[in-house]
Amino acid sequence: MVKQPKKTESTPVVAQKTTKAFTKALAAEIVRNLTALGQMTVRPFQRAEPVEKPVELGDHPIIVDTSVFIDGRILSIVNSGFLTGTLVVPNFILIELQHIADDADPLRRQKGRRGLDVVNKLKGQRNNPWLKVVMVKDDPIETKEADSKLVVLAKKWGAVLLTVDFNLAHVARAQSVRVMNVMDLAQALKVALITGEEFVVKITHDGREREQGVGYLPDGTMVVVENAKGKIGQDLTVIITKIHQTPAGQLFFARVK
Image 1: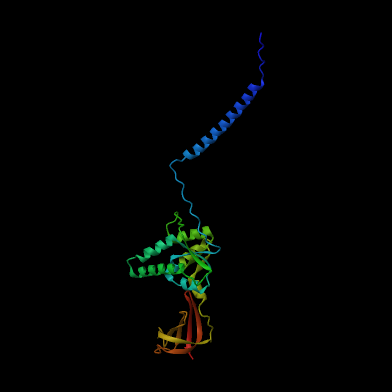
Image 2: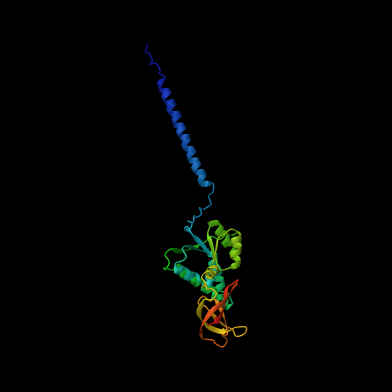
């Protein structure tokens, strides 16, 4: 009688371990594939929106109001080198200037075109290397008025608001926005004269009272000169007798030396 070889337990144990390991690996792979498929099919019809890189505004952003471009003096201020940083021009300001330039009224149309011309000259200026001009598309949709949009952006960016509009400056300051008004700068640059000071002024027209004549300093300050009526076109040496402060600036009264 032939003896059968004894069965060993080693073979089925190895096979069992191999089967368990394979099954575990297969299950893990299936889970990974299902997870990836789920991520692909959660929003099958939604396209990824392109992410617009934010514009670099620099350390000292200055948001410019429409009135500044229409006024035009900003171009001389920039070219002088006294203003540094970044002039930020929102797209809705350009649209407002375009609407003004297309207005039926000739005066408004001329102002709008001058504003657009100032924008283009600022973009191409090379006299002031410490200042750059950037255009931004940011438009706060929760507000409709351009003035309100400017205040919102100034607060959002911690920027300065540059304007010539007194009312806008008042509203912005009430909301803790720092404001630079070109009119304030113009007043600060007025000629400083004192009572008794002597200078030469050209009489341009007669005054309203008595024998007065009226002339103007180079910065536009009015000088009312006593006993100068009828001397239009003459350069007279005068002496300051009185200085009157008005909301628009100083008014000088003088007499002929």
